[in-house]
Length: 267
Length: 265
Image 1 (cartoon, rainbow over the protein chains, first blue to last red):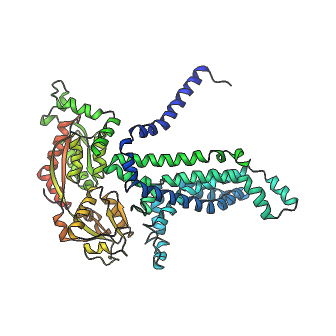
Image 2: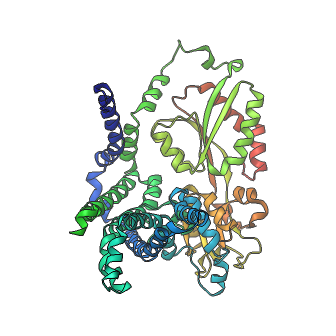
Image 3: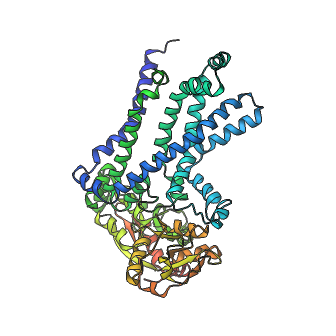
């Protein structure tokens, strides 16, 4: 059924409001940016260390997410044949970090890996302290962004045609050969999409990081944390930090635009 | 530098509060009887923005005030004083502001929004450690021990600037592992045992009870945070706002603050 002209106009109007809601705050950020001071603020001792730390930790988290997330996605895709209860439990466990407020994730991490945590107390005896380290930032970021990789790769795995893999096996290809030459090329676009989502989510991570890792310049104070703190004393610096964060996120998404689309990535 | 930014923030907020401020600065003969400043007419509601360290005391004072003036409602919003000051300058609805130091109140005063800031309490810092004092902390000098996990306030917030002043005065170079956004976060890190020591206000240490051990530091008496309170220009219920400020400054208010560990101004 075709929508009526009136309904269509109404839908367009709502779409425009939605788009404005997404785009106008970013436009305001650009309009209000202290352009006259931008060189001074970018070159100061706040922005560059925070940017370097954010890029390094987000890259490390993305790598960790891929190493752990791709096998987990394979398991999740295989769980289709499992009984209903374990299958749903597995899916729920993977989904929880996406719906949990990040601060809660940070508290949970602290209770597990903190100096008095369930595992952390043992680690502390062995001389390993995780909180307040850059490693803690990577763990917090991985915790919140791992589901993005898992679901992106799982989606790609589900949409692949199992018969192609079976045909390759029937024709005498070893399981490794099937994996390397058939399965991986088929799911690569999903992996790339997952990696991009994971990187940008890790870059924006705030709550779990500040709760679990703390906030120390050059060690654990990432861009979002630096931006929030700068709002207290120098709102101009906060705006510049926010702009840098937006620019990096946009650059990552745009540069991987082609692989983002499953078909384009295959050719 | 921040003047410009504050101006920008105020402009973003549509300048609504500034406009309201201008209009109420002029006499308003035609205003409703409810807002006329006569004793019996106290009614309606006000919003009080107050420093996080005032949480427990102001909650109690608010309840007592409402009981004394039936028909009034006092709503509190607690947070880091610097954030609250920025919110007021950006046009957040507020009738009263109580800050943890004078420079945050100055931010609001600079924007022409604070009416007669008055010091109503003082606070000093104290060392806190987890129960049992696992780090064997005895004084300020221990903050320089790199093997301990140390939580301090960032210098951008009032407790952090007091911390910095105290450490400078004593010639101690602290080795912090984290610089937190407000004093309650420092206290939480110590309560959880994730920090071996932290510097918080005496009043926060008192609120935490047995969850932390306080270590009094005589040197801290020379770095005193003075808490100012003011009504906000443009308050739609200026009479009630003024009455609440007067209540905080009264004998009853002073007694409640003293009980929580605050010093007299």
